[in-house]
Image 1 (cartoon, each protein chain N blue to C red):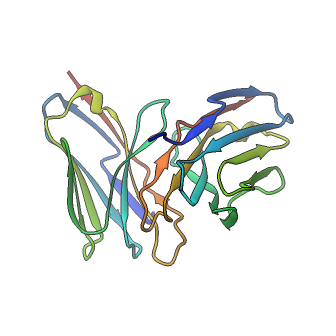
Image 2: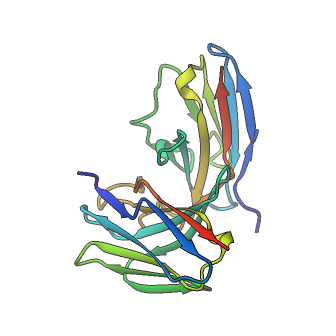
Length: 115
Length: 110
């Protein structure tokens, strides 16, 4: 079974530039999460999708971050414009059901460095 | 007070030792996740459990819902077990958002 795919694995940009990350969850997984993990800290939820609807985006900095999952399958996370503090690993995870009942599967992450 | 607390924060062991990592939480939950993160790598789900005990190879996870406590045990530890182990819980009433512990950094020396 293919795992959660993310790309790119690494990205270096200058502040004020834009960047987009892509995630393809495990086939059939209705729930998709984007997490931000800053070095030395635990993951922080940015947004949770159930199919193509947003369940929770309360911690997404909406002035610069956006995410979509138009067909309820793969998802993109965009940052525009990037700030230095956005340097982090962006993790995508998926599950058959929300994590109170479903096991989570994580991608390898996309490491962003903002200079 | 953090809602999910792990101990110890850092753990160094010799190869072959029995390892225990603890997780306590203060919120009501229906399930608890143990995750493993290698340096520079993604996160791997080890266990999701809601009661009792689960075993997978050399890894054992237990949970006591009444005491709001879970433990992750590693038997016959090996250097390849070196990683950060994270406990995470979705609070009751949430739609699946996880509260993460700060992680336990395990280093197993040969």
